[in-house]
Image (cartoon, rainbow, N blue to C red; front, side, top):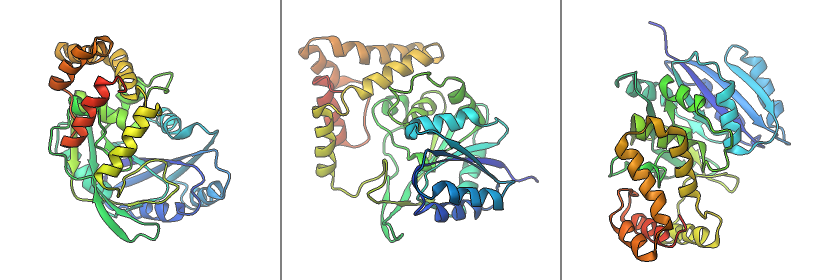
Length: 312
């Protein structure tokens, strides 16, 4: 029986320090026919030279694209647009983690246990580690509430570098990619929103990667206590850095997928957006009973507050 063909999409940017460990862990993946497509996003360090060496050593497995700097969202969408839709599964990868050898085979096994004709996405917890791979804590934990559109519109529960997609998901995301990515918060959040709305998200609480935490992370998990984490988030919303990012992404999602949404989904999304233009009293009334939710109680309280303040 042929091993499943898996395409790993890796975007790099000045990642020379850890790229060797990441690539070695990819090449060590078991029970899959592995192909790695790497797009460098305009690195100025030794990243490109290192990847060229790997591509030369593994020409049947590694392909490299040297691109201009688009940022992480643009780089991953560019990667998706350049992929040939010939694989059984598609995975995203960061440049500085270490994957456990069973990471892809475990994801494939769980995805193959579900009907293949619907959008599917696998994601998992991570073993967070420091720069030297010393274990910190496991994050995120298994969500307690359903992974539905009503969660995904306001919270991303899936770590992008653990995500593995079936062909239905990959082809739909690629075919409906916005021409302007400005209102997409992050590529993994956008995909989580799509799959939770139209298919099934499989969350594996067993960590499958060593998720490196260091000052160079573009985004990632945090060891901060909840009150520090939420103080930082609150500051970002109040000070404008995150102003309207949730509603802008929701509006874009509704625009692109309106015809695929059920009548009830359309109604709930439109109501979420329309109530922002109502009086404070009506916004409070809507926030209290809105169908959209975050996983943790305190996160949900903050969600309602930023909605009432029109900072969502």
